Image (cartoon, rainbow, N blue to C red):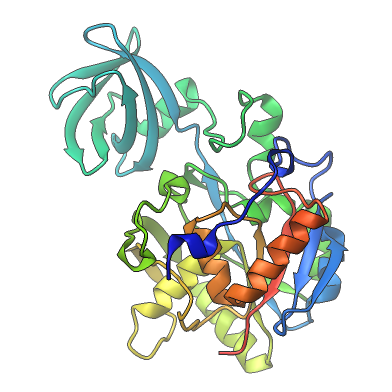
Amino acid sequence: MRVADFDFDLPDDLIAQFPPAVRGGSRLLHVDAAGTRVDRDFRDLPGLLRANDLLVMNDTRVIKARLFGQKDSGGKVELLVERVTDEFEALAFIRASHAPKPGSTIHLADDVTVEVLARQDDLTRLRFPRPVLDVLEQFGRLPLPPYIEHTPTADDEARYQTVYANEPGAVAAPTAGLHFDGAMLDALHEAGIRSARVTLHVGAGTFQPVRVDDIAEHRMHSERYTIPQATVDAINDTRARGGRVVAVGTTSLRALEAAAATSQAGELHAGSNETDIFITPGYRFRVVDALITNFHLPKSTLLMLVSAFAGVDVIRAAYAHAIAERYRFFSYGDAMFLERRPQ
Protein backbone atom coordinates (compact mmCIF):
# COMPACT_ATOMS: atom_id res chain seq x y z
CA MET A 1 0.00 0.00 0.00
CA ARG A 2 1.01 3.63 -0.53
CA VAL A 3 1.30 6.46 1.96
CA ALA A 4 -1.38 8.32 0.01
CA ASP A 5 -3.85 5.56 0.97
CA PHE A 6 -3.72 6.93 4.54
CA ASP A 7 -4.13 10.63 3.82
CA PHE A 8 -7.10 12.80 4.73
CA ASP A 9 -7.88 16.51 4.97
CA LEU A 10 -8.26 17.81 8.51
CA PRO A 11 -9.35 21.37 9.34
CA ASP A 12 -6.77 23.02 11.59
CA ASP A 13 -9.41 23.96 14.15
CA LEU A 14 -10.07 20.26 14.88
CA ILE A 15 -6.51 19.79 16.18
CA ALA A 16 -6.94 19.94 19.95
CA GLN A 17 -4.52 22.48 21.42
CA PHE A 18 -5.62 21.92 25.03
CA PRO A 19 -7.12 19.00 26.96
CA PRO A 20 -10.84 19.04 27.82
CA ALA A 21 -11.81 21.04 30.90
CA VAL A 22 -11.93 17.87 32.99
CA ARG A 23 -10.03 14.64 32.46
CA GLY A 24 -12.33 12.19 30.71
CA GLY A 25 -14.65 14.93 29.46
CA SER A 26 -14.14 13.83 25.87
CA ARG A 27 -16.21 12.16 23.20
CA LEU A 28 -15.91 8.50 22.23
CA LEU A 29 -16.62 7.08 18.78
CA HIS A 30 -17.58 3.40 19.09
CA VAL A 31 -16.83 1.32 15.98
CA ASP A 32 -17.80 -2.34 16.24
CA ALA A 33 -16.35 -5.29 14.32
CA ALA A 34 -18.86 -4.78 11.50
CA GLY A 35 -17.89 -1.12 11.13
CA THR A 36 -21.06 0.29 12.69
CA ARG A 37 -20.45 3.68 14.31
CA VAL A 38 -22.10 5.13 17.42
CA ASP A 39 -21.32 8.56 18.89
CA ARG A 40 -20.82 8.37 22.65
CA ASP A 41 -19.05 10.09 25.54
CA PHE A 42 -15.95 8.62 27.16
CA ARG A 43 -17.95 8.18 30.36
CA ASP A 44 -19.94 5.52 28.45
CA LEU A 45 -16.88 3.24 28.27
CA PRO A 46 -17.88 0.89 31.15
CA GLY A 47 -21.07 0.03 29.26
CA LEU A 48 -19.01 -1.10 26.23
CA LEU A 49 -16.94 -3.50 28.30
CA ARG A 50 -17.84 -6.89 29.79
CA ALA A 51 -17.22 -8.28 33.24
CA ASN A 52 -14.42 -10.61 32.08
CA ASP A 53 -12.63 -8.06 29.89
CA LEU A 54 -9.09 -6.96 30.70
CA LEU A 55 -7.77 -3.45 30.08
CA VAL A 56 -4.02 -3.34 29.38
CA MET A 57 -2.50 0.06 30.08
CA ASN A 58 0.94 1.52 29.38
CA ASP A 59 2.33 2.90 32.67
CA THR A 60 5.22 4.85 31.15
CA ARG A 61 5.81 8.36 32.49
CA VAL A 62 6.67 11.30 30.23
CA ILE A 63 10.00 12.91 31.06
CA LYS A 64 10.98 16.56 30.50
CA ALA A 65 12.96 15.58 27.45
CA ARG A 66 13.49 18.95 25.71
CA LEU A 67 16.67 20.83 26.63
CA PHE A 68 18.25 24.09 25.45
CA GLY A 69 21.96 24.87 25.56
CA GLN A 70 24.98 26.29 23.78
CA LYS A 71 27.86 24.77 21.84
CA ASP A 72 31.48 25.57 22.62
CA SER A 73 31.25 28.22 19.89
CA GLY A 74 28.29 29.87 21.61
CA GLY A 75 25.75 28.68 19.01
CA LYS A 76 22.34 27.71 20.31
CA VAL A 77 21.35 24.04 20.51
CA GLU A 78 18.01 22.34 21.14
CA LEU A 79 18.05 18.75 22.32
CA LEU A 80 15.17 16.30 22.36
CA VAL A 81 16.16 13.22 24.32
CA GLU A 82 14.73 10.27 22.42
CA ARG A 83 15.83 7.59 24.84
CA VAL A 84 17.71 7.28 28.12
CA THR A 85 20.10 4.39 27.47
CA ASP A 86 21.68 4.16 30.92
CA GLU A 87 22.04 6.29 34.05
CA PHE A 88 24.39 8.82 32.44
CA GLU A 89 23.83 8.43 28.68
CA ALA A 90 21.02 9.18 26.24
CA LEU A 91 20.23 9.35 22.54
CA ALA A 92 18.88 12.68 21.33
CA PHE A 93 17.77 14.60 18.28
CA ILE A 94 19.77 17.81 17.93
CA ARG A 95 18.68 21.05 16.29
CA ALA A 96 21.50 23.55 15.62
CA SER A 97 22.83 25.67 12.78
CA HIS A 98 25.74 23.20 12.60
CA ALA A 99 25.50 19.86 14.36
CA PRO A 100 28.04 19.54 17.20
CA LYS A 101 30.78 17.04 16.42
CA PRO A 102 31.80 14.03 18.54
CA GLY A 103 34.21 15.15 21.24
CA SER A 104 32.61 18.56 21.61
CA THR A 105 30.44 19.68 24.51
CA ILE A 106 27.05 21.31 25.00
CA HIS A 107 26.56 23.65 27.95
CA LEU A 108 23.17 23.50 29.66
CA ALA A 109 24.18 25.54 32.73
CA ASP A 110 27.34 26.68 34.50
CA ASP A 111 27.87 23.31 36.13
CA VAL A 112 26.17 21.03 33.59
CA THR A 113 28.10 20.19 30.43
CA VAL A 114 27.01 17.37 28.13
CA GLU A 115 29.61 15.49 26.10
CA VAL A 116 28.85 14.60 22.47
CA LEU A 117 29.96 10.98 22.00
CA ALA A 118 28.90 9.82 18.53
CA ARG A 119 26.32 9.98 15.79
CA GLN A 120 23.89 7.07 15.54
CA ASP A 121 21.81 7.39 12.38
CA ASP A 122 19.76 10.58 12.89
CA LEU A 123 20.39 10.59 16.65
CA THR A 124 23.38 11.67 18.73
CA ARG A 125 24.71 9.79 21.74
CA LEU A 126 25.34 12.07 24.71
CA ARG A 127 26.97 11.63 28.12
CA PHE A 128 25.69 13.66 31.07
CA PRO A 129 27.73 14.64 34.17
CA ARG A 130 24.86 13.64 36.46
CA PRO A 131 22.07 11.05 36.09
CA VAL A 132 20.14 11.91 32.93
CA LEU A 133 16.72 11.87 34.59
CA ASP A 134 17.94 14.26 37.31
CA VAL A 135 19.25 16.72 34.71
CA LEU A 136 16.02 16.52 32.71
CA GLU A 137 13.89 17.12 35.78
CA GLN A 138 15.95 20.20 36.70
CA PHE A 139 16.51 21.78 33.28
CA GLY A 140 14.16 20.03 30.85
CA ARG A 141 10.87 21.10 29.36
CA LEU A 142 7.86 18.89 28.66
CA PRO A 143 8.07 17.76 25.01
CA LEU A 144 4.58 18.55 23.73
CA PRO A 145 3.90 17.24 20.20
CA PRO A 146 4.85 19.57 17.32
CA TYR A 147 1.21 20.23 16.41
CA ILE A 148 0.48 21.69 19.87
CA GLU A 149 1.57 25.27 19.43
CA HIS A 150 1.68 26.74 22.95
CA THR A 151 4.59 26.67 25.39
CA PRO A 152 4.08 23.92 28.00
CA THR A 153 2.40 25.10 31.19
CA ALA A 154 1.96 23.62 34.66
CA ASP A 155 -1.44 22.38 33.49
CA ASP A 156 0.22 20.52 30.62
CA GLU A 157 2.66 18.90 33.05
CA ALA A 158 -0.33 17.39 34.86
CA ARG A 159 -2.64 16.66 31.92
CA TYR A 160 -0.05 15.34 29.44
CA GLN A 161 0.50 12.43 31.83
CA THR A 162 -1.78 9.50 32.65
CA VAL A 163 -3.04 9.18 36.22
CA TYR A 164 -1.36 5.76 36.40
CA ALA A 165 2.03 6.85 34.95
CA ASN A 166 4.79 5.18 36.97
CA GLU A 167 7.91 4.31 34.94
CA PRO A 168 9.82 7.40 33.65
CA GLY A 169 11.21 7.21 30.13
CA ALA A 170 8.68 8.33 27.49
CA VAL A 171 9.08 11.47 25.39
CA ALA A 172 5.43 11.34 24.28
CA ALA A 173 2.37 10.38 26.28
CA PRO A 174 0.38 7.20 25.61
CA THR A 175 -2.51 9.51 24.83
CA ALA A 176 -5.44 7.07 24.97
CA GLY A 177 -4.71 6.80 28.67
CA LEU A 178 -5.11 10.55 29.20
CA HIS A 179 -8.92 10.11 29.25
CA PHE A 180 -8.92 7.96 32.39
CA ASP A 181 -9.34 9.53 35.82
CA GLY A 182 -9.56 7.93 39.25
CA ALA A 183 -13.36 7.82 39.18
CA MET A 184 -13.35 5.95 35.86
CA LEU A 185 -10.80 3.42 37.11
CA ASP A 186 -12.91 2.86 40.24
CA ALA A 187 -16.08 2.41 38.18
CA LEU A 188 -14.39 -0.16 35.96
CA HIS A 189 -13.08 -2.07 38.96
CA GLU A 190 -16.54 -2.12 40.57
CA ALA A 191 -17.98 -3.47 37.30
CA GLY A 192 -15.59 -6.42 37.45
CA ILE A 193 -13.37 -5.18 34.64
CA ARG A 194 -9.77 -5.86 35.52
CA SER A 195 -6.65 -4.03 34.41
CA ALA A 196 -3.00 -4.89 33.86
CA ARG A 197 0.12 -2.93 33.00
CA VAL A 198 2.82 -2.97 30.38
CA THR A 199 5.59 -0.42 29.91
CA LEU A 200 6.61 0.93 26.52
CA HIS A 201 8.66 4.10 26.56
CA VAL A 202 7.23 6.08 23.65
CA GLY A 203 10.00 7.60 21.55
CA ALA A 204 10.06 10.74 19.44
CA GLY A 205 9.93 8.45 16.42
CA THR A 206 6.17 8.25 16.94
CA PHE A 207 6.00 11.71 15.29
CA GLN A 208 8.44 10.96 12.48
CA PRO A 209 6.76 11.10 9.06
CA VAL A 210 6.75 8.17 6.64
CA ARG A 211 9.15 9.44 3.97
CA VAL A 212 8.76 6.61 1.45
CA ASP A 213 5.87 6.09 -0.96
CA ASP A 214 5.64 2.32 -0.47
CA ILE A 215 4.90 1.77 3.23
CA ALA A 216 6.64 -1.63 3.12
CA GLU A 217 9.94 0.27 2.83
CA HIS A 218 9.42 2.31 6.03
CA ARG A 219 11.53 1.46 9.08
CA MET A 220 10.33 2.27 12.59
CA HIS A 221 12.45 3.65 15.43
CA SER A 222 13.07 1.00 18.06
CA GLU A 223 11.39 1.32 21.47
CA ARG A 224 11.90 -0.53 24.75
CA TYR A 225 9.03 -2.45 26.36
CA THR A 226 8.43 -4.64 29.39
CA ILE A 227 5.67 -7.22 29.90
CA PRO A 228 5.33 -8.30 33.57
CA GLN A 229 4.49 -11.92 34.38
CA ALA A 230 1.37 -10.70 36.21
CA THR A 231 0.11 -9.24 32.92
CA VAL A 232 0.77 -12.49 31.03
CA ASP A 233 -1.12 -14.38 33.74
CA ALA A 234 -4.02 -11.92 33.60
CA ILE A 235 -4.28 -12.25 29.81
CA ASN A 236 -4.23 -16.06 29.99
CA ASP A 237 -6.93 -15.96 32.67
CA THR A 238 -9.00 -13.56 30.58
CA ARG A 239 -8.82 -15.95 27.63
CA ALA A 240 -9.89 -18.86 29.86
CA ARG A 241 -12.91 -16.85 31.08
CA GLY A 242 -13.95 -15.88 27.55
CA GLY A 243 -13.09 -12.21 28.04
CA ARG A 244 -11.46 -9.75 25.68
CA VAL A 245 -8.02 -8.16 25.86
CA VAL A 246 -8.59 -4.42 25.42
CA ALA A 247 -5.45 -2.38 24.74
CA VAL A 248 -5.53 1.18 26.04
CA GLY A 249 -3.60 2.88 23.26
CA THR A 250 -1.51 1.82 20.32
CA THR A 251 1.60 1.61 22.53
CA SER A 252 0.02 -1.07 24.74
CA LEU A 253 -1.06 -2.91 21.61
CA ARG A 254 2.42 -2.71 20.07
CA ALA A 255 4.05 -4.02 23.24
CA LEU A 256 1.70 -7.00 23.46
CA GLU A 257 1.85 -7.87 19.77
CA ALA A 258 5.63 -7.44 19.67
CA ALA A 259 6.07 -9.77 22.63
CA ALA A 260 3.81 -12.41 21.05
CA ALA A 261 5.65 -12.10 17.73
CA THR A 262 8.88 -13.29 19.37
CA SER A 263 7.30 -16.72 19.91
CA GLN A 264 6.83 -19.08 16.96
CA ALA A 265 3.53 -20.21 18.46
CA GLY A 266 2.43 -16.62 19.09
CA GLU A 267 2.38 -17.19 22.84
CA LEU A 268 2.90 -14.26 25.17
CA HIS A 269 5.90 -14.38 27.51
CA ALA A 270 7.01 -11.96 30.19
CA GLY A 271 10.20 -9.95 29.82
CA SER A 272 11.81 -6.86 28.31
CA ASN A 273 12.90 -6.33 24.75
CA GLU A 274 13.28 -3.84 21.92
CA THR A 275 10.68 -3.56 19.19
CA ASP A 276 10.43 -1.80 15.85
CA ILE A 277 7.21 -3.61 14.96
CA PHE A 278 5.35 -1.87 12.12
CA ILE A 279 1.71 -2.97 11.97
CA THR A 280 0.04 -2.41 8.60
CA PRO A 281 -3.05 -3.83 6.87
CA GLY A 282 -2.69 -7.57 6.48
CA TYR A 283 -1.12 -8.05 9.91
CA ARG A 284 -2.63 -10.92 11.92
CA PHE A 285 -3.24 -9.90 15.53
CA ARG A 286 -2.33 -12.46 18.17
CA VAL A 287 -3.33 -10.83 21.47
CA VAL A 288 -5.56 -7.75 21.29
CA ASP A 289 -9.33 -7.94 20.70
CA ALA A 290 -10.34 -4.29 21.15
CA LEU A 291 -8.52 -0.97 21.19
CA ILE A 292 -9.07 2.40 22.84
CA THR A 293 -7.21 5.04 20.86
CA ASN A 294 -7.20 8.69 19.84
CA PHE A 295 -7.48 10.04 16.29
CA HIS A 296 -4.12 10.00 14.53
CA LEU A 297 -2.16 12.10 12.05
CA PRO A 298 -2.66 11.70 8.29
CA LYS A 299 -0.11 9.38 6.65
CA SER A 300 1.14 8.24 10.09
CA THR A 301 2.22 4.77 11.17
CA LEU A 302 -0.45 4.90 13.89
CA LEU A 303 -3.19 5.49 11.33
CA MET A 304 -1.84 2.47 9.45
CA LEU A 305 -1.99 0.43 12.66
CA VAL A 306 -5.64 1.23 13.42
CA SER A 307 -6.48 0.56 9.74
CA ALA A 308 -4.95 -2.88 10.12
CA PHE A 309 -6.98 -3.44 13.30
CA ALA A 310 -10.42 -2.27 12.19
CA GLY A 311 -10.13 -2.33 8.39
CA VAL A 312 -8.94 0.35 5.97
CA ASP A 313 -12.40 1.24 4.66
CA VAL A 314 -13.89 1.20 8.16
CA ILE A 315 -11.27 3.66 9.44
CA ARG A 316 -11.65 5.92 6.40
CA ALA A 317 -15.39 6.10 7.01
CA ALA A 318 -14.92 6.59 10.77
CA TYR A 319 -12.47 9.46 10.27
CA ALA A 320 -14.74 11.12 7.70
CA HIS A 321 -17.59 10.81 10.21
CA ALA A 322 -15.44 12.24 13.01
CA ILE A 323 -14.48 15.25 10.90
CA ALA A 324 -18.09 15.86 9.88
CA GLU A 325 -19.18 15.63 13.53
CA ARG A 326 -16.28 17.85 14.63
CA TYR A 327 -14.48 15.46 16.93
CA ARG A 328 -11.22 16.79 18.35
CA PHE A 329 -8.06 15.18 16.96
CA PHE A 330 -4.62 14.03 18.16
CA SER A 331 -3.06 13.93 21.64
CA TYR A 332 -5.51 16.17 23.53
CA GLY A 333 -8.44 15.12 21.36
CA ASP A 334 -11.31 12.65 21.56
CA ALA A 335 -11.16 8.86 21.58
CA MET A 336 -12.31 5.79 19.68
CA PHE A 337 -13.31 2.34 20.92
CA LEU A 338 -12.48 -0.10 18.12
CA GLU A 339 -13.49 -3.73 18.04
CA ARG A 340 -11.12 -5.84 15.94
CA ARG A 341 -12.39 -6.83 12.51
CA PRO A 342 -12.72 -10.61 11.89
CA GLN A 343 -9.42 -12.13 10.85
